[in-house]
Image (tube, rainbow, N blue to C red; front, side, top):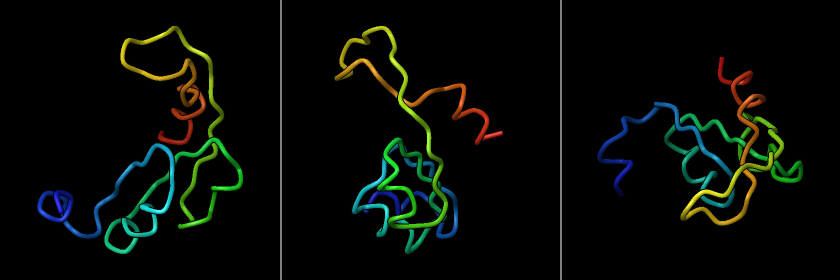
Length: 78
């Protein structure tokens, strides 16, 4: 696995959007998960940041017009 070869065990991963893979990552690394849906917060680990989505201008190659609110995310990451 790429991460196992490049990221030492115990380092921190910032994950944008959690899911079943979060649990696997948390077995070896410290995972900080950014999530906009309350039902996912805390489901696989206890280091979740609930950040709402915010509308943005369309970006080529990006599906949709919303992403995590950068102002709120910045507060968590200070």
